[in-house]
Each structure stands twice: as structure tokens, then as C-alpha cells.
Length: 370
Image (cartoon, rainbow, N blue to C red; front, side, top):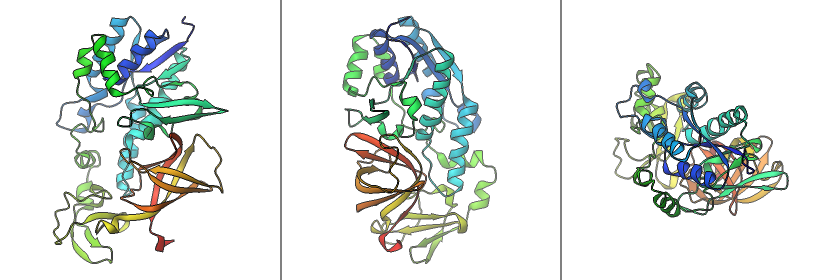
């Protein structure tokens, strides 16, 4: 056995996770590759060819790397776990008038919790992924921080990973750039990986049509919710919509309504099947409430205020905000307001490069609502 230890590497078949496995192998770790079958797109009734980490091509790409370098590779079917944690949550959140973030949920409950269980069964000391982020030990805590490649940083998606999982996690790409990863793969002859297109869709919705997915997965939904009212902030009815689950906060396109000026979805009211529209200024919120917290850097912030940079979505640059934990709820106050704060999405709090922690957005408010 390697002196560095045995590491289970999650391999999706893409360039990032493949290079992570190769790097650890070259560094002297005993590598075991694992590819997870999370979803069969055919079961959702979609028309587009299955792509991404669940496809047969991706599984074969991961296996070929392992065969070439001579380390073991296994495939695990976790469709039942994925369905229970991710798919059901995805559907229930839209039906509740919120907009879910399945990738964050998958990282928390699938790519780490499920992987850690397999790592234990395979006698692996560590688990590794191809995420662009860093993890380090600081005192008794394990802290995630941003990857050096700002364009690829994935720390936002990892806020929910537990301390137990972080204590055994290796993130080989955190200190590297995408440019370097491509050069690394090219030098070793993995040109197919370099030329492979990257998928940015939700893995179980490769056609990027979440509305169609919901309609297929929830029989009778379309008929049950169609015909609700579009209303302005003052309650004035200005039209009718296709059903509240088919809209998201901040949406402008696809409303099929003309008022003579640009309008956006500012609120979704499930109870009355109303979708509230407003101007860009009316889309602005001064703060939000966040629950189901996981605070990795500072485990006890109850009753304390802290200056942070807070992100409300993956590609958000972040906004200065003061956070204050009150019981199980984080109160977040933005200094200059933020547009399109969306219940159901993840909020992640940063202190410089470090992830303090995160949670799920419950609701947003304007100052006059306090």
C-alpha cells in the first residue's frame, strides 16, 4: 500500500476529475476510481440524447483512464439515492414556489455522503474530486476556500459538505487554473479529454427544459396550475400565466406579456397561483433570511454580527453583507441591495477567500418590510 494512502476519486469522465485522478496517481497515492450512475434520462421522457456524467460515453472515458494507468475503477448505481435526495427535492421545491439548486444538494448528499460510505467499504483513507476549490485544516475545523482560478471557482457549491467529509477530502485542482489542467492533459496524450465539450446543464435535464421535466414527472400539474394571474406590485391584474411553478424570480424572457416597459418576476405566490411582476428597481431586496445552515469556519455565530461577502447564486460576484444568526436562521443585510434574491437557492457567506458557511434562502425583504 502507498505511504501516502488510498484515495477514492470521483471520476465523471470529464477532464477535471480525470486529471485529478492522474495527478494523485503520479503523486504516489493508491488510487481507486469511482463513477456514479445517478440518473437515467430516458426515464424522464426527454428527447435529447443522454449526456454528461450519467452517460455511457462518460463512464467509458473514466474507465479508459483507469485502465491506461493501471488503477482499479468501479461503477456504482446510486439512482435510488439520487432520486430520493435530489429529484424529489427538485420537484417539491418548484411546487412550493421556490427555485431549487440540485447541484449543491447533490454535492452534499451524493458526491460526499455517498462517496464516503463507499470509501469506507473500499478501505480508502481519502476521497477526492475535480472541483476547483481548496480545503485546509484550521485548528479543529476544516475550511473550504476559493480556487485560484476565479473563472472556475466552485467553492459556492461545497458549503454543505460536512466536517467529517472535509477531514478526508483532497481537492487537487484548487491551486491550479483550467489552462494548466488542459496543458497537463495534453502533455500526457489525453487529447480526447481536452477536446471534450463541457456540459453546463442540470445532469438529469440535458435539454435544459425544466418545465417539460416537471410536466412529465408530475402528472396533471399543467392543468392544475394554468390560468393564474400576473399581477403588479400593487395587485393590479395584467394578464394570465401558465402556472406558478414554471417561473423563477428575476425572469424576464418568456413572460409573453407587454406593458410598454421591461418587467421581471419579483415574487411567486403559490397559495393564490399569482406571479408578481415589477421593474428592475422593484426586483431589488435589502436582505434575506437563510435556514438549514452549515457553518464550517465558525460553527457558533448565534447572536453575533459578521461582515461578509455573500453570494446568492453560483455565478454571483458576491455582495457586502452583514450576517447575524438568530437561532437556526441567518439574517442577512445587504449594504446596497441585491436583485433577484431567489428562495430555494443557496446563499454562501465568505470571509475573504474562505467559505464561512451557507444555507438555503427562505425569503427576501425590503427595508420597509422589517
